[in-house]
Length: 400
Image (cartoon, rainbow, N blue to C red; front, side):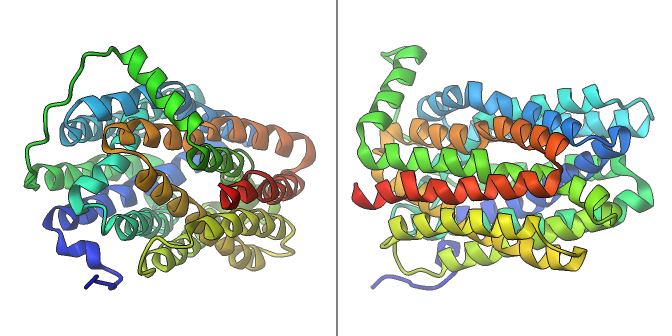
């Protein structure tokens, strides 16, 4: 008899270690992300600068995400994750020291963001494809949803803490706290007990593995449709979040604390969406859920952008997080169940590349539109485009 409990993945010791370490580390990461956005806006007062830094953070994922998937399919995933977390810890420490010294400039922030993006190009597809090794396929859909709940619980805790700490002790200390937080996930990975994975054949080179992964995804109708939907949601939907500092600063004049509230409210909605997905007994109905998730994301973004007051905006940003977290875990789970074991890392690297790698172009688009049209109108247009995307790639998923 299947265990239908919300936390059924917790029966796996390795997953418990992973969950606790990730919660600590991702809380620190969201503290850094919120403080970094405010630092850029404080230094420049420019929506365009926010878009450029967001572009720098995500662009490496677009160019190197597939390479990260090849590494995940060729090498032990735990070793790759420990190495990636260590480099990310050093990145946060460097950003902290430069900020606390008073010598920080916007190009420094962009350079550190690009460095973290390069780490994420390897870490994210490896982390996604590592989940099945901790819980097996039976609990995969639950573990994927709980992973999203970790991310978005941290998205509530981190920005709320950063919103208070930035005003009290400055952005540099938030970056330093993030550096220390990586120790938790590294310790969790080190404490896991894993079976020795079978040796993976390496007769083909990296280029051949890349071509094989792309060809497989393109020739598999369901995977192709899912990846198209993810691209649309990332380009038009999730990238609008980069403009939250502009809403907090220029539209509602609420300062860094207001930015913390907006980001945390979106995170609460995302957490609710992740828990909704985790509470499902099985993976049935995910195609329909993905379609409605994309449509809901676009509609809720358009409503948020037209909020008449700050607290109305706080309430209206929450559904955007909910629908995004209904959409992405659905797509993530469908891809992992569809892909064979030897191809999973490369398929998840395509997911990462199109979810996060397309985001820099969306960030640049959002920043440019906000510069010329203002943040409210820019986000309204992006939301309506995302809603239209549900009628294209979204509907094709239900027909494959």
